[in-house]
Length: 452
Image (cartoon, rainbow, N blue to C red):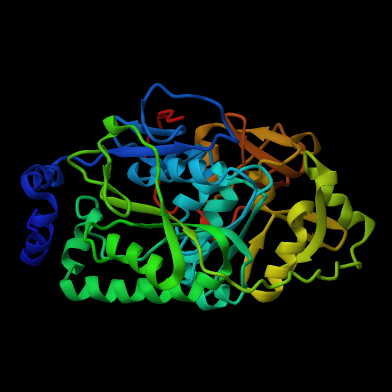
């Protein structure tokens, strides 16, 4: 690996005698790690655990994840291990239900993690400014299946107008990507001192723009995947001095090899089993005006048949049935008012559970309903399928279910929901989103290697 001379000149003083071991680690094989969805499976695989994450595991080799239906069913997420340290930060500093914003959330690794970690009755708002990436974020969170989430596609300025709306906030800031050199060769080619300074300025702008949305005494988690102090410790100092915050600490096991600095925690590949990462946690001290969440009028035009969609929930009394984005949505009672308020003020892609749409007198359930942890399978016609059929379905190819009832059928693989088809007898019409489909060709011989 040929490192840019300016990167060496800037990084060597940070590491001192550790610089050579650091360079050697960049040449080593990068670790492969996954994080399990505790709400969909309690299976504990016989892999090496990620020490700072209850549901994190290292895999001995990299499998072909795309051809595992359980990945598409939301049973696990392929995530870099260092970033899973978010678990320690959050569980030590957020112990009561909160409204939390993940500002730069795509593709969804940290948002799916937050979704599993936040105290019960919390609301997670996951935002991504780039439209195409926001749809990927929405896909991954719908697969994860937690109904207490909302995905939006807004600027930091848009969110900053929601004064004091959030109790906690994660800003995984766009950065120069030095910590990804081993994982992404393109990151080396794009690196420059000028790019570092551009990132520093961009980070300050987005932090300043979104800052009013965090309540006084609210928690800010700031992270990057880079090494330089300009984007890490110096940025944290700027937050404290210019925006108004105090630094908090995180208790950790020293045996993990995590490096504590004056303003946060660093992950170096020669010390920890993971890529480069920086994280810090702060409490907002600055005062802020408070915006009142005005109750939104409920849609009263839904018919009894439309309202009956709630039967697909395990806990139907816990949800409100509303029209949202031209579909029937099921919003958790405890968050419905806030979700409707956000839907009025932001570009919301989905909220709660997107249940489906009515075509005439027929209800066509959405894939998000199938993948939700709230799905009541007792209300569904279910067809358990083999690996080949599951992958054909995920490729949106025609499949045949000769032994299943005609009509809307929920497909499952190893007991886990994948999505819906309309069984016509001689063929099935796929109801899987075309934009989610597997695009790679299937090998001539399929062999299932169980990951989780």
